[in-house]
Image (cartoon, rainbow, N blue to C red; front, side, top):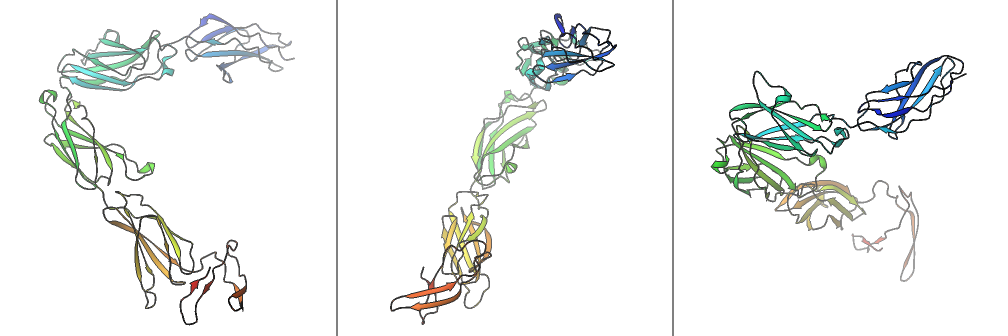
Length: 464
């Protein structure tokens, strides 16, 4: 028969480490057949059971689970197998947590910026809390630094500066030796030890980035797509050597029209020589608010950005209206509608609608223009079953390009066919009409229009 389950795994605090746990058990009855192996399963916290691939020798009654996560809760259970088959699973162990450990992740995105001729600012990306292996209270960062030489010292003997707090992201190293190349390494640490070191970063100490920002930055709109900038260099004492040039950062912060996410732009950059104290930004979006900052740079790197200034480009011509459409089409009237331009490029004043017969002839040739402030226009007194061309332009400082569309008055696709067998019955003061409906088209018939005209008149007028 199959064996009985082993006892619940027994755990001792003395056998719990940061990445491994040792436990023991008492075998159950073997079922009168030799045991072949034990199977061990573990569960992380309240997670699912996972089998350890290793088959445990049937002659042992203890096992060490390795490669566990520090400061993580685990449960264990065991199954015995003989020639007949496996036993049931043992009662699960009590839950136990592994010990804290040193940080498991190296510091990333390390940057070193010279700020004076004998000091540098070291910046890095803070390690997420999950990688501090359960000990965040004592966590911090250790910055090791030494001049580059043919005979570097070991990490243990390297000068260092420590900062507390797992969210700390920068430190300033001072009193460095001038005109030397330094190698800087950042390591996360806690009371359990040090994590893996970040790749070393080299920096030359002796030149410093500008500590002052460009002064008196002024931005003025020149046109709907151009802005003129003027500024003064940083104070001479803040330049820290000869300037190489300026970097101009600009970003559209308020758009005069809605753009889809893929049309939105990130901050843009232009670089100009140090001799420049004015510059024009061109090919900008029309009637758009921009935020602009300027910084000076030298061989050591970038200085601080200037205080942001805002400027709005001037109005321009609008884009064409969109989605021109026709509805409520009768024999002599229709409703033309459209949407505002996707690029308004200014304050919309209104629209001008132009329509004319598509085919010019002596009877119907005419062009009509009408200004409107809305996005639709009911057009009446059209000719029956005649094709018209409509154009619509939006207006800001002037009219922009047109959207164009054609339409024919009279029955449309899906309209009902004409009534049949019209008969008249008349009295002294009225007329009674009878007819037979034609096909209803793509929907039910909703009503009727009646038109009449005098014998001596050529134009029909709608009665109802």
